[in-house]
Image (tube, rainbow, N blue to C red; front, side, top):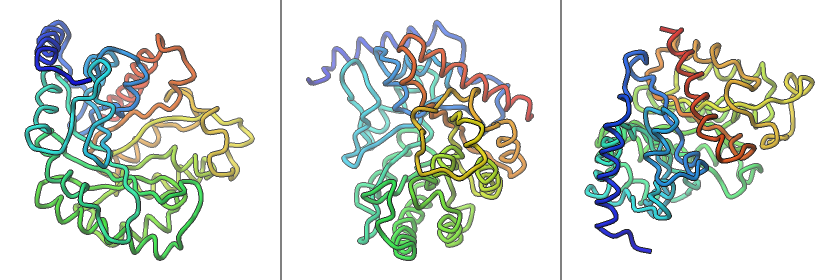
Length: 326
């Protein structure tokens, strides 16, 4: 169904009215560069009328946008439609304007991409060129192979292909003033030897990491190993994901199979095994100045009526830690 001009106009009149009725989003309690935003797919799970009001309902400072290879944004929704794209400067600018009408930022894009022996796909290059018009400051590329949980290519070849892709992104990122990062995930990036080998090819100011400690926990690392790896790579973090898992005590200190009971044991951020006050302290000591993205994978365990409140508590929990770290 096509999204008509009249419906768009009516919707954004309502947006402006709504934004005038709520308190300002950007307070002085959060230090510069430490704003808490929400990963885009979570907002769909609130089953609200549109993505912007869903974000406001949680108290988030902004949204991390998910984009597909056709440059559509499948989780930026208005009713049953997804009218947003990052394929032209005009379309990208529309995202920024509509977000700002609600007092929200759109500073980060998540662009999942498959490892490609031919280098960076053309759509990723176009994306880097377009995202500044949407108010985006950083793109992170979750690079995976065809088997997320299984090794299908030798480490050396994985590293070679990944570095070749990243070099193209970094060059374009410099040109268009967009920071470039990867995420630690899958059977490759959750291993320090892979991260070291790739990160060593680039100066820290030109390329970094979307650091996600729970992805390390998903991989099967013991909690102490997760803490050690997180502290080690904190200086390379340009963005940071927060979610949590509660494993039985006897499973926390041991190495587990990849993905062991992950979905079952996902919980809201304040309730899980990882101590984020400790972790965010390492980020502060490392000079971190990025955004912090909530990626709560536990929402499916709760009725839709409770999900906005869960995300609101996640955000408040992280913001209280940030306030103490000041």
